[in-house]
Length: 554
Image 1 (cartoon, rainbow, N blue to C red):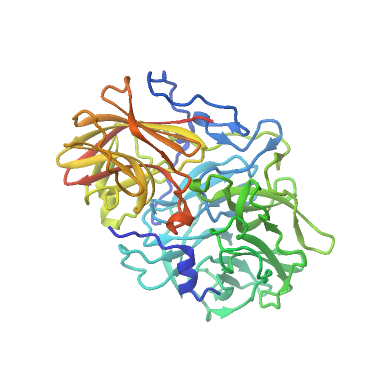
Image 2: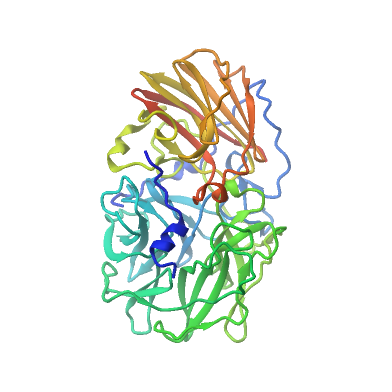
């Protein structure tokens, strides 16, 4: 299959630069995996002291347990956060790109500890970019920019804005509804002073919606020119995008991103403007940019795409994404930064470079966070732990999960065009282990996967072990024993990756080649993704996976 992900920069060029599924309960996913004895001879690094709290399986957790937290609030590739305050509850979702199911919704009561609710989009109709999650008149809406993909039957020639809706945040969510908006991304919803509903779009453009929010009620028109930074600043591109709107007192505020979401560390930034009307004119904040990485020595790079939200005790926060210094391979992670309203009514960020711990929004430690990434495959966890990668609608049936196994029906000739399921990861060092059994003429294996052009890992086939690096088979042929069943392990230790394999899951052999993977990132591949665990099957048979185990190493 051809590469299905199209980068944001390409979509902005197309745009002029300017789920019918009930959400399954996933409470069981939050339970820690059973403890097990460490297998001998793995040479896995020992855990090291962490600057973060310890969550399930040792995963890093923002809540430090002492009334403080340290970013990220969601570790791993949770880009373009859209957050909704709904009474005392907070809900958040992110760009899910090629993931099927997609649009995993998270819930929190304190803005720091998050647990999954479930996926809102059973089968994407194309590649999903930055959404807006809103509630209006008691109903929930997610406005979604879909990007053309080779497998898409409905989105062909340009980005399009669609919407799904539900009576409850847990679903069932509707089938996607086409709003007829083409050539734009990054919708941001607001209700104007006239009581009418509007979407602001990349560019920045604006369109009125019908009262039910399911169609447009007028043309798309230019709304705001954006704030212009000095030309000598080192950025990727101007890229005016990500409008998020709020109304406070007599003012409407528009929070936008400029500078490009990848590229140089000092590129992406957050800006603000205000108006007394959704029709403008818009006055730029006198201290723009209100958030920006100013030095490559800072802890977080390329910070942008912010939403303003009121916290549990009346304090205000920006929720946005950024790259972790030295770990671009983890993707754009979700960050939380407090801000104040100045005496003249402008937002002023208070978090600095976010390298230090900050007070919890509630002033105290919170509850559970995240979920176990280990999987016995007893029941299906598609849409939470795992998602299919770049699946056309008719390919979802190739994945069967339950009864203690995951069965992938092969296609293609290898990871580049095979059937894949992936899951996110947010730790700086971790170990993943799985057993694979081959049935028929198939190759199956364990990868760290960025996209179909960039991955590394091991594949088991009838002729022995195949090794991958840089998105292609290695010249090195690992002398692993011939077997149709194998235990595979990958250790990623602060960007150094080592492979292991075993016939019995007890005595392990280290693969002859190690890799350094900091270059597996957006600036190398020109695609907004992350390096993450994946299982794959290629060929005419099927690969059966059992007992996937995850362990954070600090």
